[in-house]
Image (cartoon, rainbow, N blue to C red):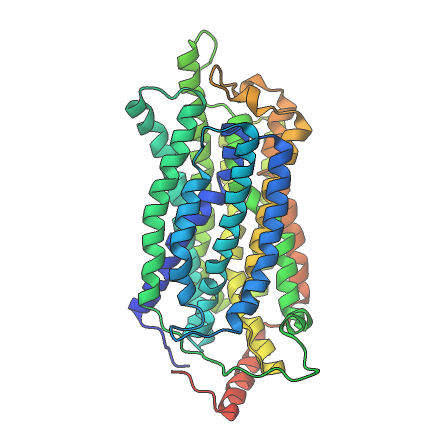
Amino acid sequence: MKNYINKSERMSYCVGAMGQGMIYAMMSSYISDYYLNVLQLAPMFVLLLMLLARVWDAINDPLMGMIVDHHTTKRGKMKPYIIYAAAPIGILTVLMYFAPNISKTALMVYTAVVYVLWGMIYTMADVPFWSLPNVLTANNEERSSTISFARTLNGVGSAVPEVLFLVIGFVLPKILGTSDGLEYNKTKYLVMAVITVCIGILLYTQSYFKVKERVVIPDKKPVKGEPSALSRIFKCKPLMLVILMGVLSSGRYMIQAAAVHVARYAFYIGKPLEGMSAEERIAAIDASVSTVKTIFQVCAIVGMFGAMLFMPVLMKKFDYKKIVIVTCLSGFVASIFTTLIGWFTMNLYICIPFILVSCIPLGVLNVITYAMIGDCLDYMELKTGFRDNALGSACQGFVNKLGNAFATTGIVVMYMAIGLEPSQMLSSDVIMAATDLAKSQNFAMFSLVSIVPGVSLLLCAIPMFFYKISGENKIKMEKELAAQREKRGITIE
């Protein structure tokens, strides 16, 4: 089959995905820690804000998909949103980590407004951006490989804030002369946000100038009695199975979202704290948090990103459903070992190989779900004559954001369940170490990155046993769709 995307265009799109990954990771990996431990907002407020705002944001994805599918501009159907949304996203990301000197009540209003606005504007860019591969090429394999490489670089971009967290943690105390208390942490997060935005937005927006929308399916006027776009989505069984798989895999987000909380309250790695001065104690605990967070970061890089690098090869040789089933079950088994080791020893170093294996399905799912949605859109076009690219891709955004909502709210629920009080754990006077907590509290926090993601991976494999777009069925579908397009007079530029 003919290839349509040249190397320059493909690289431009994928680098844009890297920039987008940086921005999203800055929010998803750190905002719960910032709200709970740095701004020290009431856990119940954070719980309600994150749950309601993210669920609302997830609902916005299908709405945005319908808007994109029904409006075409002179600059294209997907591309214009890259430019329109870039500046607002950058500004709101910085404001999210800016702590104004106002009352607690006013601060809660401020954070709620910024958080909700960020989610809505981000949706405006996210849905069309990840719909682009569907209109860049009509070649299924080329589309899949482009998505795979883009998701890989997106994952690389998501690691940049992780690196900044470590580097700034070492550099900033030397500049400020202290690493003491809340003001230091506020400055640390704000510096991270500013650097991430400056680099991320630049990488993201450059993609606008290089990519070309080729697969333009002519708009069909609605016919009375004809199924609506949402109806077509819900009646597409393969797509519903992919969405269900994504919802059931929501626990996998815990490995990254909860890592900084685990670093604060599950493990302490360093010299014994007894006999240290207050300043030495604070520095030692902060170094431990950075070290533990780095261990999880390295596991994610090796496991998740390593899997993403091999995905183009795996996706050419094996059915998507088999890849999902095998890797997710392997991740579940690894999580069992991680949990048992944590329960009996609470030794992070022994857990590392199993955490690494648990991260492999994260990389697989990050790539393969987008490719599977592309196949589902092919199936829907074959059956209905419609191709709702943005709405179909918005389903993945819905799943991602719903999963992120479950992960972040799950973290807050754990704080409340085991009685952690951020105002006591991290204050201007003292920082409590993980060793100051009961072992049961340490393990409870650790479970967020061990057994919780593992059970989620087990559950998400179940829908794949009923997924039929694979093997000979998939080959037959591609041939029939190509013939149908030719018959309809649809040409790809």
